[in-house]
Image 1 (spheres, each protein chain N blue to C red):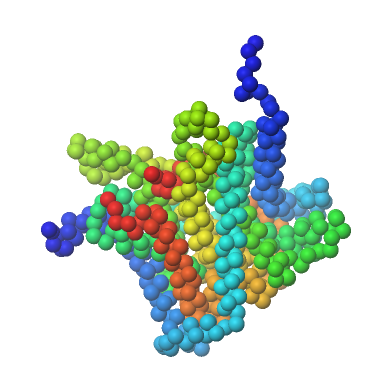
Image 2 (cartoon, rainbow over the protein chains, first blue to last red; image 1 turned 135 degrees about the vertical axis):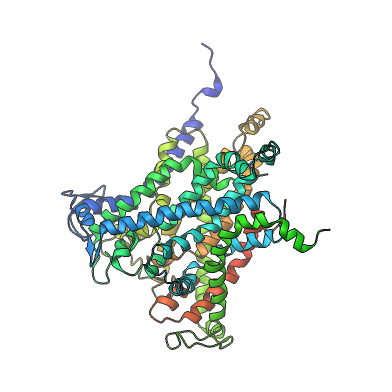
Length: 294
Length: 297
């Protein structure tokens, strides 16, 4: 047997590995700890944080008598004329429409900024970035006034359109960066061979930038599925609420239904988490495509 | 040389690609932006919701003479830096460790991404519960060592500390993700060549890793600063700006003025515009950085 000194475990390497794992375990625990509270509260009977559980290691709350009651009460939740089924449907319609609209509008814009030269290009790109520098909460007032004039308050449009526009600032530049990273020769060659510009875009550029398309979709999904501030202003009757509004209604000035709140939080968070896990690999490439080019 | 008109005509298709997005931007961002600047020079408030008129710089004079203004400026600056620097540092450290030879990377990554994947307005309310004076887990934990409960959200300095900690918790997964992406894009041949030349450990880090991911670090710092400066949820849901103005930053001040019962839209608008001027410089850097304001091919 020959011995390979490089592959041997030296004291230094062991110490290094132990330190790395210790740090990673600590950070992983810190990352999930607040979420453990949501899970415990969701399965603990009663609506307060005061009783119903014991602490493992003095820190981790574990329900004494786990129950699914809070989940049943979420599905049976009603607030004068609005039901859980209504809110789920509203959230789904608004979110799916926002994702589709966002992808359909940011792809052509990102393409034009990446591949075409035209007067005012720089100024236009700058104006798409402007919203990032402006506190969004304040634009809600004029936005509301516009939609009130158009008679679109308390409709799906009142949310879909602002959410879609809100996704532009980042999404258009993610797509521009992604298209920039594809060599021009590829789509130019296709067009010389007689493909239309649209075909070159659709059959060459889009398939090569799918990670970024996924990132853009995820961005639009998060912005609409979780938004509270705008929905709170736009959707006024209880049957038009989205899930975040229903969730917020469980926190009243006088009483907070922590149990039901936590159960509903979990129901809302699970799809986000699943989508994240599926797209995790794409996210890394999608978000950095534009920034690390040489 | 083609006339301007001809050039515009030739670019018709380019404009068509952007048009739908542009219309949305015009009505929902640029118009509200201009409208906001306009009402910051009026007296639109609870007494003049419909019949407001121009009053010049009165709102700005009011803000600059407000004894709370310097406190809010200081809070906003401290808030931004005390969040961004640890967030970027932690994200970078985690990305570096996960990019080295470690067992169980994917499981760690799954856990570490949780703060980003959970809806922030839910987790922030959970943090609020954890800081609770009576039932909160932090005081429960301290109590085991016989330490008296800390009034986390009632004390000026602790309250600020509390929201910064919660926001760092929310922020590092994003930084970890963008740094992981940048690290993965470094060709392994570079490291191989370096190890032949005898560069390992710290030297390898200093001469290869850091220079190559510097653009991403700058991106993280700039984007992080802009987002933190404008982060309404983190600065509002736990403390609502209190106690007093201890944790009030520009954006929460603007929100409180407009929607906090006073309906003082004009002063809120002035605050928002001042915030915009603060952000304009880092924002401009960011746009330059993204290759936007340089007219390129």
